[in-house]
Each structure stands twice: as structure tokens, then as C-alpha cells.
Length: 502
Image (cartoon, rainbow, N blue to C red; front, top):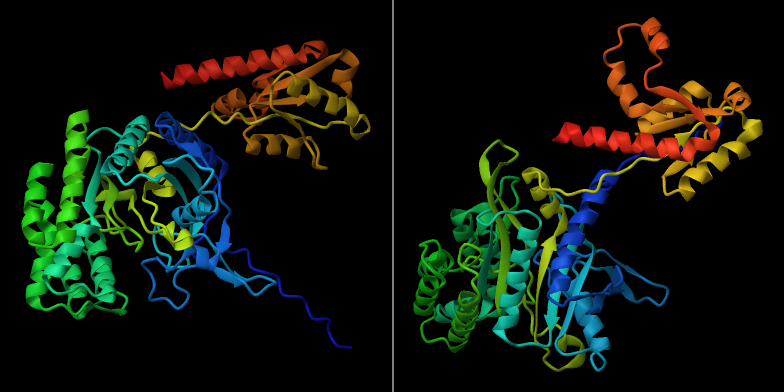
């Protein structure tokens, strides 16, 4: 008789580039975002949510990883054979929303959004295919003051999170200045411009020599993959690198602008970019946002292709150790810029816009490193043990009494005995276990086991006999005083925790 084939079990594995997130990180992230949203709201930005999925043509093809066959997005066809894609940022969906609701929205329209985005790119350390962003955008203003404002708002948000002045800097550049530099070397071709732009964008990650290679014939990376370069000659590379390194010489915003003005030469577009940064600088100076908070840096170009003017990069300047143990700057946690042509893809009419996006996971990692996470205390529920399944309704009533009094509580829903239930309550992190067996019910009492104090005392108890004799952190209370005595015990636990932290 043939043996019955066993069905293959699926492996419990995560797709590459994705991760699970536990309760502690969720709570801390929620608190962190509440702080950021509070700053954005104080500037007058209102919340908006857009779907995870958009029509592929609404998102456009703006990702920096366009050498991949699917151009960096997760896409599929619906029943009407329409191509749909998971959003890769929160800006393209905003442009679609503004275009669809243009007549009824106030101008400028100021919104903030937070949510998951998805990129079908090669994952790596700290680089995920699903990650969260938090954005704020002003749509309908062509003023460089709007660009300055989102940078100021980002700086205020970092400080509200506890990041000290000097541990962050908002770096600002203007795409028009780069265009002017490229005009000066005879490289106005769009394809060449994009290749050059993406090469410059890798400066922080790969360093100047790698950028020079990518501006020239190309570069072989550590994995053996070859990236074709922009094909510039030595003089052209030198001119572009002079632009990139114009901010490295230091000085004020005015000093950087003077160097950039020389580099753009007679290019009208380049001069427009310098003029826009000059207006931003005058406003920032007037309202007191100095270079140690918002600086000009020509090396900032941003990888996305839809930016048309000022671009921003938020960098955290404190040092951490990389995977090889080297001491490096923490680096970028967000960025943005002006995108005056994005809404026009839908309407045919130019609608100026600017915005800033925070990489939530990166910012979380930074705050964790700085020990600045302000996660609310996660009060695990009181666990009420089930000692008599014939009287489970009585057990449930105790749980209800606690909940109605505002105390988180749960009834054990498994089928195991007391030992396993106590183990569950301990693993659950419960502060208190409530026990009412037949003997307690006959006496009109319940046992309250202080699990926090019990864990502390257990470490000092040498033998099982001593454990049984002391019955650490367990007290009998009248059944009618259940809520009051549980609340009293919780308050004592909180006070003890505060004393230990002091």
C-alpha cells in the first residue's frame, strides 16, 4: 500500500526587506509621531490619509533605482487589466489628491501625512522594502519662504524630540544650480543629467572617489556589480566636483552662495537657483535660524527625479559605529524639496509645491541611540486566573469590574492548570494575578499576587521551602474590595518604579 504523501509545511519566514515590529516599538513610534505631528499642526498643517495602492500611471516613474526591470515599485493588474502599484512615497499620492480636489482646496494647501511606503529595491542593512514616512507639504506657493518654512519646521520637530542643536543640521541646495553647472559643461541632456544627479546623491554613502568614477566610465562595487557612469571627461568631472565640494570649505550661507554664483557662470537657470537660495537665506537670518540648524550644501541633490528647485536633507551629526566597527556620522533621517511639476502631470497647469519627509524608522533608531524615546508606560493587564471552569462567569465578572474601573484586565483563555496560568501571567508581564479558588470563594476573599514584587523577591529566595513559607508578594483581600485593593497595589508598584528611577 502506497504511503500517503505528507503535505509540505510552509516555512515561517519573512520576505527579504520586510520585518516584524513588536509592541514596544509600536508604542514608542506612535509617541514619536505624536510629537512630530504636534509641531506640524502648530504650523497649520492638517492631516490627510491616502491609500496604499494607486494606479501605476498616477505614481509616475521617478524612483532613483530605475535600472531595475520593474523600476522599483510593486505592481499588479486588477480585474480590468489596469496596473496598480503600492505607493513608493507619500508625495505622488498627494499630487493626485490635490489634482482631483483642486477647486475645493484652500490655496496654498498645507497637509501632513504618515504611513507605510513600499520600494521593490535591493534590501540591505537598515534598508527595507516597507518603511514608514511622515510628510508635510505646502501645495500652491511658489515662494522660497515656503521652502524655508518646511526646513524650519523640521528643525523644530527634531528639537521637540530632544535632539540637541548641534546634533542635527538641515542641508539645503537647489536643483536649478546643478542644472546651471551642467549647462556650463555642455551636459543639458536629460538622461545624462539623471545619471550625474544619482552619482552625486551617493556622495555621503560612497565617498568622493566613487562619485568621480560614476561621473566617468563607471564603478565596480564590492559585490562585483558594475554601474555604468555618466561618461564625463576629466575637465567636466572636475567642474562638477567643484560644485559638489563648494560647501566643504565652510563659511556662512552667504559664502557658499558666492562660490556657487561663480560656478553657474552665465546660466540663467543657475542664477535663478542662487537667487532662490539667497531669498531663503535672508528670511532664515531675519527669523534667527542660523547655519548650525539650516546650512547650504551643494552636495545635496536628492535621488527622486521630480524635484525642480530647492532640495533638503536632514542629517544627524552625532557619531555611531557602523557594521564594521568604524566611527561614522549617523547620517540622513529625511529630506524633501520643491516639486512644481508633479500636480501638472494631472491638470496640465503648473502648481508649485514643496515638502519634507521624515524616515520614521531611521528617526526611531536615532532617538533610541540618544536614549530620547518617550514611549508611554505600557501597562500590561491584570490577569484573572480561571480556577473553576464551572464558575467561569463569576471569574468574568471580576474582569468586568476591573475594566469598568479603568483597569486593564483579562481572563485567562487557555485550558491549562494554575501553574501554567501563572507562567502565562508572568510572560505576559502582568503586574497582578487574581486568584479565586473554591477555598477563597467560601471565605469571600480573593488572592492578589504582586507579580512585580514576586519577581524581585524570588531572586533572593534560596530554596523551595523558603518560597512556600514566605509565599512572596501574595495577599488575601475581601472579594468586595477587589477593585480598590488592585488599584492600591498598582499605585504602589508605580511609586516603587518611580523611586527606582530617581
